[in-house]
Image (tube, rainbow, N blue to C red; front, top):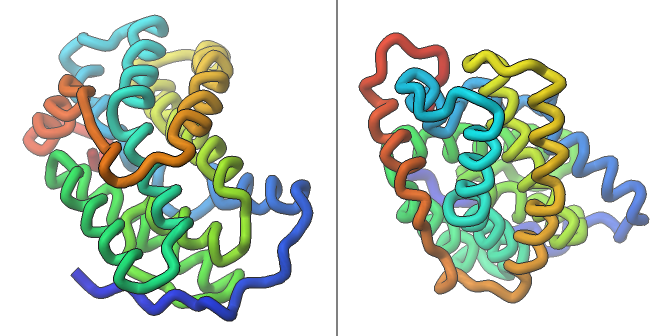
Length: 230
């Protein structure tokens, strides 16, 4: 894997007001930002096809478990760790850890491709050096460069993560758009809670007990037919 670029310690712009921060993060984490998030279901397509997740209540519980006990919480910890890095070596350690805890080849592909796309786009528009980073690491690194509040970044990242899974369900279950938005709205307090609960967490606090989600991601590697990349 390509090494990450040196951290531009002197390139950060002056700190901006909270309203500007929110709008910047809303742009970064919107479905319109070109990271290709629409192409990934994070293993959900497997359980859609098997019938394990077939109605709104199933989906809400599935996403809640992934946020609480799987990739959601871990991504939040990785984002915070990347935001706090003050050296190339520290950032590289966080990124290698992100790869190490990815439980399947498609999960690795998902986080690498989205992270690379995010890094290239933010560097082209807001400055800095594009780097080969996993997605949550890239977001945390870019937020530090822009001096964006890490707590706000973590909460909005989780909400975007949940939103991408809901969007996948709307396309594949099918789940109505209104029902999908109801589920996403119900997950807002959880996203906020996880962001707050990971304050002060370190890489030693990473863990994953969302085993069904991991197995679904592994099975997706050979799933046919399929419309998502993961």
